[in-house]
Length: 219
Image (cartoon, rainbow, N blue to C red; front, side):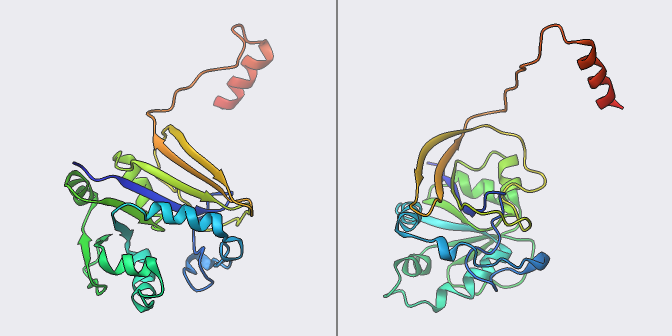
């Protein structure tokens, strides 16, 4: 039975997912709002995170997020943190072209998106993506993501790495679950639902002004 790939992401209203956990987490691009999620984290959001990790899983990460995790989670006492305990046991798959060693125990390199597709076709637990903004356009383009768990905080960051960056293909998703935390974080789960269908609210017989407007757009 093929694996299920789940993308779980913390987002701002404008789609930024960079450095939710702290000022030094990821400062690339002169990002100055690191730690934007920490003051909004509440029990309801914690339960949502727990649901992502409730079923058997391995991690699927980009190299930058892997480096962040590898510098943090192995140094958390697993006896005191259940997530740290799980991360210590599971396999960490890293999509990277770099040959630099992966020192976190249980880590394996995936050299390209074809390797991810091969891994997905194998028997095994879910593959959960954390962070790793660069993975989404590639995975969505290949139809490899089975579920998105998006936790959207009520703030705008203006700049930073976005979940759906350059190269993300058009697609339709089906909402399968939605909840709201007391602090206003919208927690929604989506599954792919096919290509984007389009229609039109335009008049069957457009006015001369509308036809002129369309010609102007072409110019």
